[in-house]
Image (cartoon, rainbow, N blue to C red; front, side, top):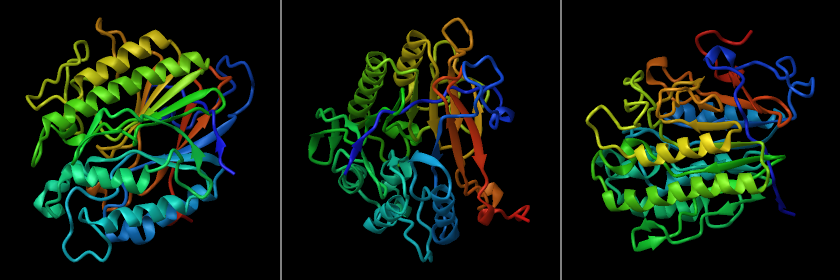
Length: 366
């Protein structure tokens, strides 16, 4: 009944966000066709009663009516702090995970996710209920990651990071949230990499937890690239929650860092340097398209922000940031991104923002 997948990854066709809707076929690709298949990516939702009751169900219905093969949520099942008076769960109580499980299992195709900082790292905030962060992460592991299968109406089997390299509330535990699967020549992997300095800042930083999980994430990156090479994958897609920051240009939405050394430049604890350095080294050695998908800073975009140590842009790397709640936009960024995948194309991936008609507010659908 369950089928094991082997799936592809998306290499972006352009540098700027204006390129998100390009099609394959007229840029020197081997086959003159639009794409072989598509997937859906989304995250940082829901953040309010409106989003939980109508916005996210509209997104799910839109994905179910599309032709995607599977979807991935890149973290944050709720807002960063609880909202008094909400009718839907907004603290880190068990109810928020039950609500999310219902969303994922309402998706017709396989549904994947990776944890977000609002789901566990920031649960120790008083406004989130003052929970133990590690206990909440253990709870997520039980609710969403207790088997080697994805979620969704038609789950698929995934490779799981099963070594006892992470920490839980009772000590060493497996990082079962880190998953990998392959489909039609592309390798996909999720990684538990978090905002809030990757658990090195905010209410109750936990350096020991960070160190264990960071080492596990780095190992999972290395193993993913090794598996992609062994399987002759044409591309790789990495999905995590955090926007780690890549250079000095985007301090309003991400940590600033020296693009050559990858050292954080804003004086905050740096929970991402070693992870980013590993991603860069592996991307250079892989030579084929690598896409890095994340949420966290709630600003839809595609670009090529990663440089080598000499300041040269890595042509085979592309970043996609998904839509997410944007408070400045008054709840109307409740949408998803379709990734067009064609392993026979030059760049493998192209991106199309999917503006859900039922969620349009500034310019309602005709």
